[in-house]
Amino acid sequence: MTSSQMRAVIAGTGRFLPEKILTNADLEQMVETSNQWIMERTGIKERHIAAENVSASDLAVPAAKEALKKAGMKAEDIELILVGTSTPDMYFPSTACFVQAKLGASKAVAFDILAACSGFVYGLTTANQYIASGMYKNALVIGAEVYSSIIDWEDRTTCVLFGDGAGAVVLKAKEGTAGILSTHIYSDGTKADYLQAPGGGSANRFTQQFLDEKKYRLEMIGNRTFKVAIKMMVEAAQTAMKHNGVEASDIKLVIPHQANKRIIDMVAKQLGLDGSLFYMNIEHVGNTAAASIPIALDEALKEGRAGKGDLILMVAFGGGFTWGSALIRL
Ligand code: UT7
Image (cartoon, rainbow, N blue to C red):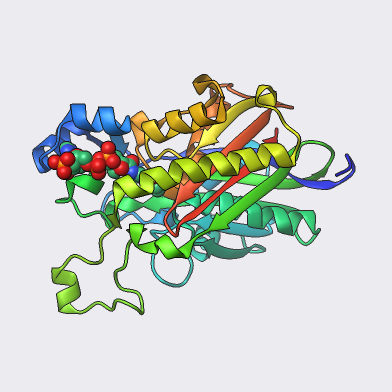
């Protein structure tokens, strides 16, 4: 790679979390659980929950507006909108099309990326290809989720984990050394049943029996997913570092998918990286799936955890299984 290469540079970030907060104490009233169990096993204290009439695109739009403002761009100038989501507004049109309409981004091509919790890193990868090829000069990449809409609120093994929210990043084409250096994405469909929301698709139609069995809800084999998540996040992070000839000491900040504090701690340990390099906001937002990395990125940048010229490593894992990493110079 030469310094004159066209790269996708982060020009602005934004996030939006719905107002309502569901605490561990609230959950203690709903299922047989305890604040102590949730804190010790996950690191989550509270999560934001969208009102019943609020969709993924409703959360995406304010996050996108903030990112556009930060980038000094108008919605009309955006050429590509990608929304990573596994809780779309509806099957179709895509959530990205709803976002396009709500923003008035009339010039943009808009489509969704379905890769569960890896949706943002997949989206970043896709946008990067369009920008590097010269097809588009900018892109708005969003992660937006309303997992509260697919949670079984009587299932303590999943309902304590997830939260709602959205994060957005504006990418701009720019020559130089800053921007996305590389992304590395992977899939393994043989483990689809470890983490899935089988309801309502063409394989599992909405019959009365299906509804009675609550099959439209999210299902997860948590402890098996846990082990694979650690292994794959470590491998994806190592690949990104090796590909770019980067040492641990070169990295200013790691933005991991916020699924479980214990997963993040173990990934840091296995990579031999100082845990303080890993940004964590899981305590206050829970697992927001595809929104998790862009929400954390926006928070971290606004806290001044990284600045111009710094290297950021993102690493994600989710249902599919899907996983991946991205190395970015600010
Ligand atoms: O974002 C996409 C990727 N997602 C992930 O990577 C999530 C990965 N998985 C996890 O984070 C963890 O597996 C969980 C947090 C979901 C569960 O933690 P764990 O330490 O793996 O617990 P476990 O599933 O092995 O369950 C241990 C015990 C069980 O009881 P028994 O069978 O030992 O009596 C569960 O029934 O904990 C019980 N349990 C709970 N107890 C209190 C499960 N959920 C709860 C709960 N409160 N909420």
